[in-house]
Image (cartoon, rainbow, N blue to C red; front, side, top):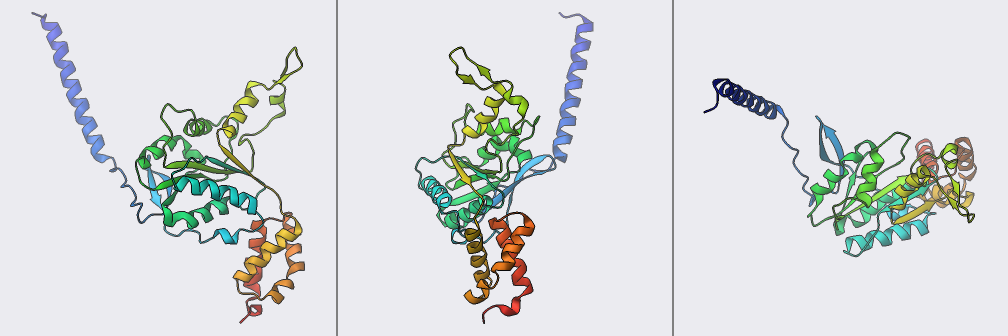
Length: 301
């Protein structure tokens, strides 16, 4: 028979455990219930949002109406990503995609246009901010087993020194012990080819072997390894003057201007681009909106 002092300690421990369980039950009762999953038969796109410390899929009520036909001057890039996405929704092998290059060239707009093009065939989109990439595994678990096909979209992606969210992205792309799901791909846009900053000091780690070969340092290898996990790289380049004016003409025609009225805007459009220091699809769209707003009476009847 245990001594009386041992019985007292056991009794105290049991009471402590009961109080802890009671406290946990009270805390759990105050926590918000798990957010309901979207009805993917009616929801086309969601954003991953953190609410009261919990992540949830928030449906996007008003989708951007841009179409693939609206995107001019990037026919080669458009064809490559359309082919990859079509393979994906048809259940064929497809790659995660990294779109990189000059700003305002249509990278993000192309993803939105893909959704509008293929939503009727079961394509869905989940937008995730860079800060929430650590939740990628949870997001993928939520959509696993769904009949729809999902693009997990990370826009304007880049990482600074000291940020660790890229490790979660690397794992989700290729490296987790869990097999990648058949119904999800990651599409990301970035102005940086390797997603991370390049410093001169990183090149100092490069070593020269006895046979003359050059071996990059560990820091450079770490940065390159992230972008290499995307199976498809699509690069975007600055537009020349003719391509820029063609995009301006397309948008002005959409606002209802006649070809004659559009031809008369060439000088204004070029001056607009000069003032912005860029000839891009975004700048062309901004000029068209500004011109249409100020010259509504010049539109064709």
